[in-house]
Length: 84
Image 1 (cartoon, rainbow, N blue to C red):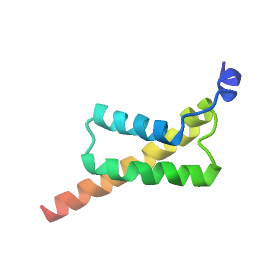
Image 2: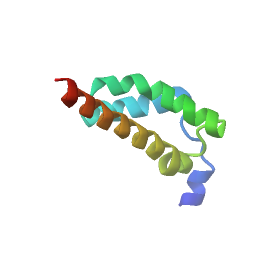
Image 3: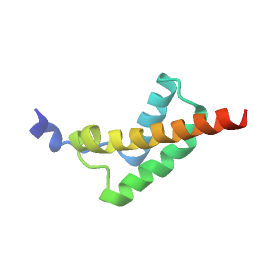
Image 4: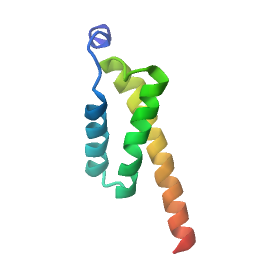
C-alpha cells in the first residue's frame, strides 16, 4: 500500500497550507500559529524542492511542520506566562 502512495503526488503549496490551518482550528491551537504555517511550508518546499509524494507528506513533511509548530506554541505559552 505504501508503494502505491509513493507514486501519488503530495499536496500543493496551497493545499498543504489549508491542511495545516484546518488541523490547527480542529485542535483549538492558538491563532498566532497560523502566521507561521506559510513560512514553515515554504521552508519545507525549499528543503526538498517540493512537498514530495503522498506518503512522504504524511510520514516526513507534515510531522516536521507539526513539530515546529508545537515548539512555537510551547515558546508562546512560556512567554505568555512570563509576561502575564
